[in-house]
Length: 263
Image 1 (tube, rainbow, N blue to C red):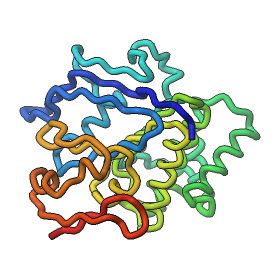
Image 2 (image 1 turned 90 degrees about the vertical axis):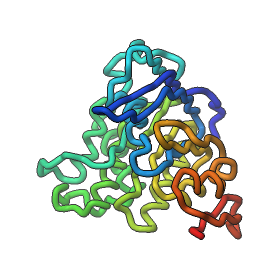
Image 3 (image 1 turned 180 degrees about the vertical axis):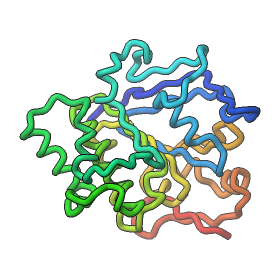
């Protein structure tokens, strides 16, 4: 495991309104390397909005400070940052008749690799997410889950030269996946964090977060309601307050993480 206990992302004094609705209210968050951080919360809590601010998909207010690896966003060359920060969005608007391999090869654009190296990287990431048998299929013909896995391979490819400064943001990466691929995706995320990456995942499934996250941030009403390990953050009291659902929580019979049951 890489020993990189450092701030990968820091954002201070973030408030965000969309229309007349206050989405985020004066949040300050630090995201560390070597961790999977899960963003949880009910619908409309601001999870995806926070992720979009952290990735700069949404512009942040002038009084908000955003840093990657202790350097202000303005200090990062635009051509360098994509090697270190990759985002898997909830949905893709890609409609061109690219093959699966060609879509994944889009992740090569920020990189400096020989043709031989590029082919090897793309192949390795297709195998990691289990789409190597789809390489020649046209992307628009895929199912939603297959498309999600193809884009995961693309962002993994994009981060191939990130070295010790790696940020991966995943917005509901398991939403269209079957059980096996859900766990494979989160195992890949966990492995990246083990190797030193800062991984941020928006999830709806509390049990998946409990199993794979090192840290849980629970958002509601534009504020952070809980922040800690799964055991510390995912309490029955907190879940009832935030989600309005009574729960029973017990230890997994084999591993040390909480299992949450609706009561």
